[in-house]
Length: 406
Ligand SMILES: Cc1ncc(COP(=O)(O)O)c(C=O)c1O
Image (tube, rainbow, N blue to C red; front, top):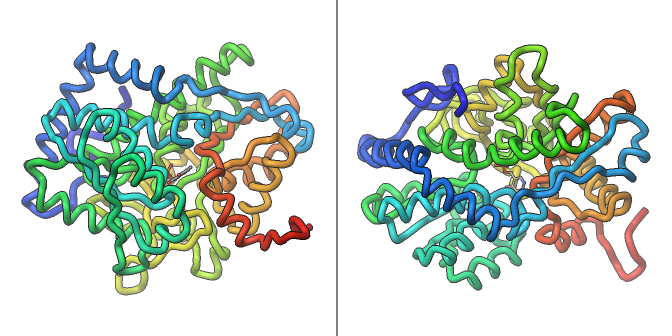
């Protein structure tokens, strides 16, 4: 479907498999099962069926009339992944991987989660397909995303709190990998972003690329052309952005839109407290793949920081690393304050409360749109809805009985 990765699971130099010997047979088995899955027409029909009747696809492409007028430049569209069942893009991938797990005869699935969206999406798919489900989550994220923890439990999953390291997504991922190494015969590891050893970055990209494919068709209907001038998406591990970018990124030079990935600058790139792996990191190996990541002088992984739990990951998928090196996409960073402002702006102006992760994309888009021409088109991938974030946002902006601070 896409020209990369190569047969060794590489996007240029990035990706690959930096894992213990014992996992290689499991990754080979998975790669082969996924190859068959892709060519299995009835299984592909089944995937499409669930995306349509359970997830609610295609998700809308909404013309943001108010935001367009407010910004006074490009025509702005929102790809509404926030309207998916469970509230974010994550479910596109978990339905696919859960179907694959079932095909492979694995009755137990495990997952790691940061914002809790991937955990909820995994627990949901596990409930749908009657699979046992264990979700690993850092203690800090359990606190920030209490509502999602409860949702996972309601859906029948066991949530295991991880108290090591920074107690966020990186540490939860370490625990999930440990579980997989121990239980690999019976267990399918549902990775939530375009990270991990081959074939995960490819597989997650393929499942998420429905976002970009739909956008092309919808733009054709709405604007009479499939390619906008600009596409903006937030980047944590990178799955919603790759899902939107991939169908565009491999178009020939001159036909490709300006693809912009927005990382989390946290307290600011200069502060060292951020999650911008491309804008403020270097190359290294994390969770089985070569990618851009945050590390210290000794090469140890540095803690990431972002007010949005879903962007709080110290690495970025290998395909994004490749796009960045080869100028196929641009990567910028938006800090906590700017993201919070955009969170409020989109809510007030458009009547849509975005996830804090998606608010990073909105913030950059709102800065860029005014300097674009009025006939130009910009698409923002709205990766999720803000319901999970309202109590954390309320705490941060100190909403009191008197109302919002101005
Ligand atoms: C709504 C939302 N957007 C974005 C992300 C970031 O993940 P990714 O970069 O893989 O899309 C998350 C992660 O949990 C999320 O919940």
